Amino acid sequence: MNKIILSLFILSLTLNVFSQEADSLEVILENEEKALTEELLSDTSDATNIKFKHKIVTIIKDDKGKTTITVKKTDDPDDLEELEALEELDTYFYNIKNKGKKDFKGSWAAIEFGINNYCNNDFSISRDDNDEFMDLNTGKSWNFNLNFAQYSINLINEQFGIVTGLGLEFNNYRFDNDITIQKVNGIIVEDATTYQGSNISKTKLTTTYLTAPILLELHIPIKHDEFNISAGVIGGVKIGSHTKVVYKDDGSKVKTKTRDDFNLSPFRYGLTAKLGFENVNLYANYYMTSLFEKNKGPELHPFAVGISFAF
Image (tube, rainbow, N blue to C red; front, side, top):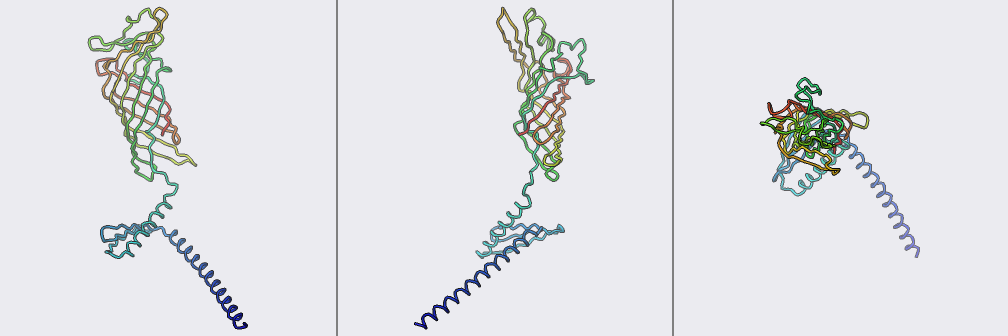
């Protein structure tokens, strides 16, 4: 009996010692793993591993910018497993280095609201006697833009780049006088007789253009926001136009819409600019092309200013 008790005591003591050694070994392994992880995280060199057929291509860039490329042939499954582990490590470090880093994104894609007008060659919005019929009620002449497509190209540090895209531009030119426009002998003139004596409440010209810009855009970090500045050229292709007159006839409200090209420039180009914070910007467009084709109507250059909400 005493021998059995003694044997059980020795066995218990041995297991206890092994347990303590295993705990110590686990702590040592955890410390080694932690030290290795810290060493890897502190390594600022860039390493890329690429598997190509039966080869492993390793590209290493050190802190001084020196790049080393090695090619290793392999059919060993262990090497392939090592490569997969290295690729996972590359992805891990890439995510750490780019954590919180924003890609360059332009501010063209947006919904925009503004007001329209046009000016003469001397940038005056006052009309001479020949063009007086084109006077606008600026407060009711609206510009609406839906810039639905955007492509951004980063040039410098995710803060400066080129932006382009596509958009739709809708312009309402609300006439200040109780007239509309018409073509006479191929030239745009006023029509003051068709609705003479009618109680006109609204008369306007509406145009629709498909637009595309080429912009240079700069993002300036300010605390937790970014200040945006963009400027460039914008082009447009006319896809629709009409006039609309709303008046009363015998107490009834009547709306007359006339669709025509009205000698409007089918293609146009101009300058555009934006500035603001993050997704809210002010915009301005000015077209160097005249509203009407040359010698087929008054020479007037459209412009619009307003607010833009990027998406």
